[in-house]
Image 1 (cartoon, rainbow, N blue to C red):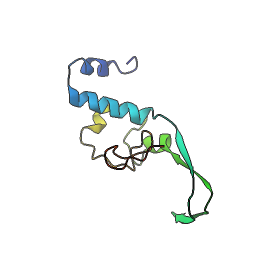
Image 2: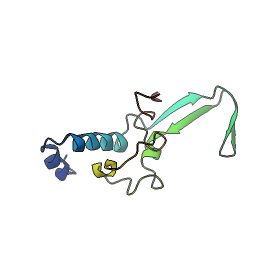
Image 3: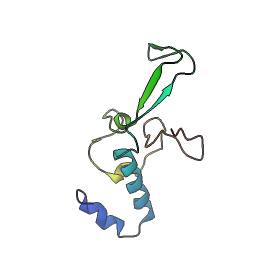
Image 4: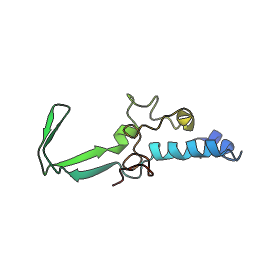
Length: 107
């Protein structure tokens, strides 16, 4: 709130849509964890990179949520970016990705 006083004023207006966008931007900007790790259950190839069964793989949540290829001005706190956001679970991963009602991928 200190860095974005305009958000404080908008939150006082009792606009539930803005509150939801604000919460989503907090989750994008400050994810619950910077990454999650898992062991590959089977061997596979991802983007021409071979990953063997048993390899520790990391999902860079912070990096994905701050990737300039996916987010305009990713280091700017901007709840309005969620005005027309379609909810792609592969570009927004606050703690693992996906809608909690439809197969959420939480660590």
